[in-house]
Amino acid sequence: MKKSFELALKQAEKALKRSEVPIGALLMKDGKIIARAHNQTEKKKTFLAHAEMICIQRACKKLNSKYLTGCDLFVTLEPCLMCRTAAKLSRIKNIYYLTKSEKFGSRGPGYFKSKNRRITSPLTQRSVDLLQDFFRQRR
Image (cartoon, one colour):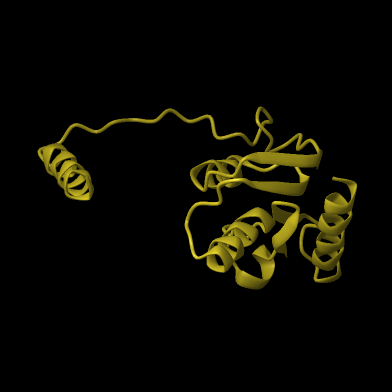
């Protein structure tokens, strides 16, 4: 585990050298490195370019699968809600991080707290029908 975090820290150092927030991530499966990445939000001009998101994308490409079952994610900072959700949807087994995020961590002030609001509309049924048809065809 120590070696994994050392490699994630090297990614964070790369980010710092490029004037990015210094966060690094590493994905491993069966003791082997599948992907590594650092923050690139400034370079790519999008908040989707978090180290974890890039790492997940690279691992999916390498394994040719949207699922990363059995993989472990090592990150230098506690993942934000977006990255944790992406990891969960990707079926990543474990997330390990070195530093708690006071701002965007699981209960920090940057945590997304707005209420989800369901809008009732004549289009609601169309949305339901599309989803049901899709999953019916898949089964």
